[in-house]
Image 1: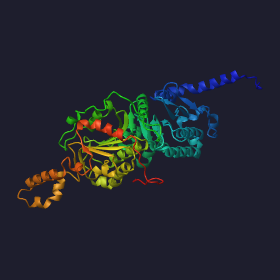
Image 2: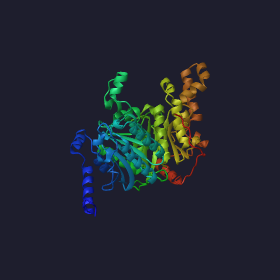
Image 3: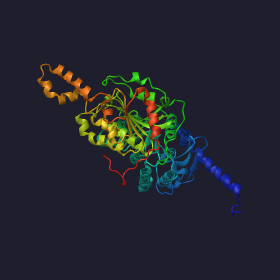
Image 4: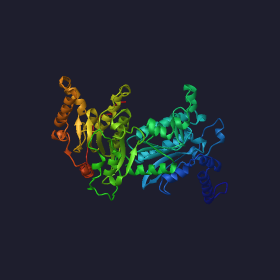
Length: 520
């Protein structure tokens, strides 16, 4: 019997009391959190996980730091909750900052807990979700806190392309802390309550004299629409976490598995008659490519990535015949669907992510070319466009291209043409594949005839017609084997599902190498 006379029941009672105290937290701190419009860490975890499935580890962890009064403040968990549970019945790991404790700031013990859960997620081959609501490094712990961040960044990088990593921004994330979300696959943000920046408004004001608010500098809409740092932005935490759950339902647990399939009621052979009226025959007229995609995919359901940024290209998850696919498509409603610096980066990252996690790629093409201009050239459109080219050429998942209308110049090649490794290429009878548009081509090829003609305008019109008839008719590429078939647009869904089924067992390998050296 212990010297203090305690029994096993006494010890269990003591443990229960300690854990109850941890779960309750400090009421005043909870009220302050709610007053800011934010949920507590455990309320967030309840929304993320299937009910009653979350298992916490190291809840009794406390820091060992001294100085600056830290020795008198040693709360359990040290400001971060770590563990695993089920999301839609599948194992998911997470760490979640508790802003009520040290403002969620990271210290040595705090970092060690995160390192542990990241290592477990990688070892178990399961997704990792971080719920971020922290004030950055714990200043009182100095370099130990900085080293803790270094360990997180190293693990983010090691897990990249192996397990899905999702960062959910539910509060501030400043300084070096912002680099961990930037290293993950997806970043979710909540409007008004979450911000990300390297240097805050006070530092910006002191260094540059610019006046700006926290949300103006690094709020959800700024990163979802201007910087491209955030993939999703929502008005409240509940909706945000529901969408995280939905995204997880579309992703495999790791890079050795296929995305989960789901049987639905949408017939695989359903004809898509609506697309015939959605897409104008005139290649200069805009239309909404998103509406075309909704008509083709299962039940019209999409999860668009980076929907508010670089809008001339659409990147979205959807299902075709129950199988998850990644769709890359030009958007004629935005800048005629051109490829520019940002849209090339956006599509390249999406292609790389899909390839990492065995998600087949469908590319819908209606592209007039790369955006011309001094700003684009000086901004490096060559190397940024090369990122998309590199991503497609490097991808070994099933790849299917569908050309709806225009496919001009280098942009045609970059949008997963047969020449860079697409498994199959289909075209609608409205397709125009060429080095450039007929008008521009005629001005170059026939400039002398046009200049010498009695009526240059009439001659130009005639020669444009001849050029189109000779080199831009819808069967030109098919006759040369660069398009596998010209299809009825209404059959697009059936053709894609049939082709994906054929390619399901595709196996392709890249040359042995340490890693590639993609364009910056």
